[in-house]
Amino acid sequence: MSELSDEALLAGMAVGDETAAVTFVRRYQRRVYGLAVSMLGDPQAAEDVAQEALLRAWRHAQVFDTRRGSAATWVLAITRNLAIDAMRVRRAAPMDPARFLSLGSVSLDQSPEEAAEAGDAKPGIRAALASLPPEQRRALVLAVVYGLTAADVSQRESIPLGTAKTRIRAGLQKLRATMDVKVNRP
Amino acid sequence: MTINPPDPHCEAVQDELAELALGTLSGLERSVVLTHVEGCPSCRAEVNRLSAVADAILTLAPEVEPTAGFETRLFERMGVSDRRRWSLPRRHVQRLALAGGALLGALGLGLGLALTSGGGVPATDTTAISANLTADHTSRGEVYLAPGHPGWLLMSVDHAQVTGLVTCRLTTARGETISVGTFWLASGSGTWAYQLPVPADQVKRAWVTTSDGQVVASAVLNT
Image (cartoon, rainbow over all chains, first blue to last red; front, side, top):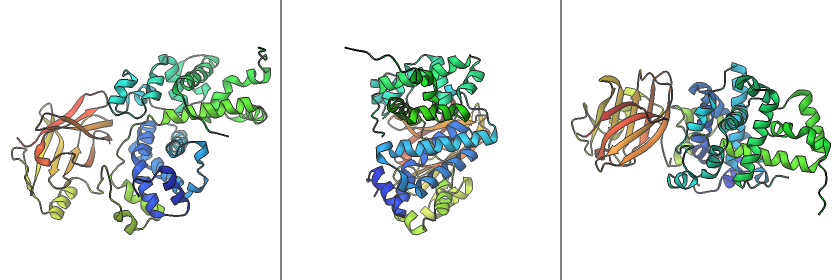
């Protein structure tokens, strides 16, 4: 069971297979909790979010569509949305984007080759993010990871609203151009 | 070759497409952009591409061990039976829903272990070893090694004056440095258990570092 693909596990979960659910949880709990705790900075709140995200994956596995992305991005997107909701309820100030960027096993200063040698499976996206101008990277992480609106980013960074919007859009577009993201969305 | 002039309607919503893709657009603005996107295949495709980039950024989040008992509580909420939980092996790291002395007691009772304190006595097949985690000659917690196949490491950190993610590292008798796992310190405290990646008697030093490499505390073992 542990060697089954994510998609196979979700297919099993969709029909109520508990063994698939246990395997899926053990495969993803560290990533889900890691995202939640790096967004919220509070272990208890992060546990609540991570539990709810995995619970929703279990309850709604039947709506997962492989054409719309991977299981990893699906469950992490659920986690992000729940964490953003939790931040809004708690009125918590988002953490420093530099903190999110500094986490993980590979530094942003590393080249893709160095990252690959260090065992990072995501050197492409990490290197692409590292290649952005710092102010663009900050705006992007604040919007993508912490769910800040352009108006929020404008206020937090003390920049005009138009500049905030441009930084977010230009950052995403640059990453798209350098990442070779495979999109199979309808 | 003829280049079509940009559609003024598309031009008008370009900045908002990114926010729509990120789910941060709301109210009237969202309604206006959505109306355009629904009727514009080009902008719809752009939103999908930008969403995929945002999803990819989320995968950069670090892997962090959840708090003790996380899995048990989750499986109870999911209604997963005990039989299912225990019938599957855990591959990487097992967290135990026990802490501190309770965990040590469980390790000792369950594995038939004796405990040696102080770090001066090497671990054997039947002897667990403990040592103080210290920083600046002040105790910051304890480390326990329980031999076995696999062996276990329990790390309990207190009053470390650090909040956030920290990494547990080991130095082996061969001089190798191994990163064992990452966990969260809340107000300087946390307790975690890991499967040992090497035999317990091969661990010479254990320490905790912050994400930028600063040493929070360390312990000498198997001297």
